[in-house]
Amino acid sequence: MGANYLRSDAAAINFRNMKSSIARNLFAAALSTGISACFFLSPLTSAAQTEGDYVLRDFTFASGEKLPELRLHYTVLGRPMKDSHGHTANAVLIMHGTTGDGHQFLSRQFAGGLFGKGQLLDTAKYFIILPDAIGHGKSSKPSNGLHMRFPKYTYDDMVRAQHLMLTECLGVDHLRLVMGTSMGGMQTWVWGTMYPDFMDALMPLASLPVAIAGRNRMQRKMAINMIEMDPAWNNGEYSSEPRVGLSGAISSLIFMVSSPWQYQRLAPTREQADSMLTVMEDRYFKSLDANDMIYQLDASRFYDPSPHLAAIRAPLYAVNSADDQVNPPELGILDREIKKVAKGKYILLPITEKTTGHGTHSNPAVWGEYLKELLAISEPK
Image (tube, rainbow, N blue to C red):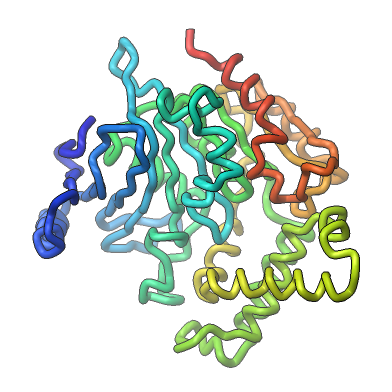
């Protein structure tokens, strides 16, 4: 598949060396015909990083709402390869967490530990796909203009749109591996139940395959309530971020992703704790939009793959850490639910100086050995 890949229902247009006015005209022409459009910002001719957009026409959400144009942004590394039967053999889908985007996986810690020469997901061997989920990153989201009129999307909507992006835009008809962190981990479970024959292996990180309830749901609802209680939110029609409400919501986020042991180690005095908190709050304020955050947190409201886990056919390694405040192991949920997955295995990482609570999901130095094992046992014959 090259940069000029074209199907009856999707068009791929190479933007390299193309003036913006021409690109806009091609884009408008594609949409005017009623087809979905797939735009690569550079051709897929090397292992270098490439970005693009897939625009789905008249996408219908699980709620019944429709969006005339749903944009899905993605980043890819490497090149797709086919097996002897003509099926994609080396594609790896990696999905991010709530409020994140695909670029988070390009960090020195994650990409530097997985995508390099000779590493587990070497981009000379694998075709790495990093989508921005609906409502996140450069994909369509409330802050683009619809605000609280944006369709109330769910995790199922996210996965279904990603499947269309893979098959209709990137020409990927099979995945060597599906993995994700936090929300992306939950979407990994959904992928396994919705499209059980589409992948060779699954690795959900920092997630549970049950409905969001208990403290997890309460923290999400508290964050949403804090934003909506701020008069400056103005039913989503604000001119500047509702800082008081967003501050309350950020407090919930900080607690959810915290590691008591690491926070105590990094901030052993009152002054250091206050300074660390200020840095974290400032980072969140620079990256979050209040309306987007409401949608992002509430997208999990109908998530519950537990009744469908027996449908998962591929080997699945569920990896959580013992210091994860979002998915505490004492709940015993994964111990129970993993038994429903025929080829499932639950790995609970013990607390060490390398684990960082919920964020351990982005440190392959901690769980990489299990990914290596999963790739080995799921190698196509």
